[in-house]
Amino acid sequence: MMRITPAVKHLLILNVIIFVGTAFLGNKFFYDEILALSFPINDSFNFWQVITHMFMHGDIRHLVFNMFALWMFGSAVELSFGQHKFLFFYLSCGLGAFFFNILWDYYNFETNLKILVSLGYESDMIINTLGDGKYIPTWVDVLGKDNFDQFIRTFSSKMLGASGAIYGVLVAFGMLNPNIELMPIFLPIPIKAKYFIPGIIVLDLISASTGVSFFSPSNTAYIAHIGGAVTGFLIMYFWKKNQFNKYRWN
Image (cartoon, rainbow, N blue to C red):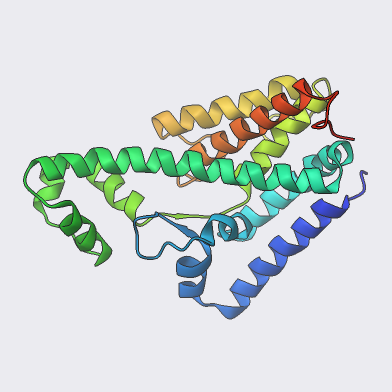
């Protein structure tokens, strides 16, 4: 069994402490409004949430699944990178997941907002009404129920979890160890990392575009997963391309 490397160990401990601490406090406001990531135009948004949301988890299953993946793949990646470079990589992938997800949410939100504004509603009035937890019934007719539900859901969304950063770690593991065979829980057949990891990313892409969930809850931030994976790939590509100069890893 692979030993737990220092950075991975510290991340595991931090995630568990925050989960247990917030559960012990039982303060939903502290959990939802202070640490989890709110949509940036929502009054609940604070700048530190860009970092703190990476260490929050919705339930014990969410925590265990992410921490198992971090231990399983993160230690191998840290052994290749070293502690400091691994932490930089991990946090960068988490930030990449945030930016991808926020851009996607902004696109969807602004699309529906523009429709309402084109009908004479003022943008500030719409946002203030949503902020008060209210809406005008005619908005449902104008946008259609599905678009309206997405509009409301995006404004009040809470993003949390280490999954985006971990998807970046998965990509790094696959690029460093492409021919290692992995045994998925849901499909007990050995699959090489160079096929398995792109495969789960493709499934997330399908889920993001169709709403069909394969192995995770329907409220999963699939775009965040993709954002973390893309960020991880870009960093790995840059480092590998420049491995003989100052950017190389140990």
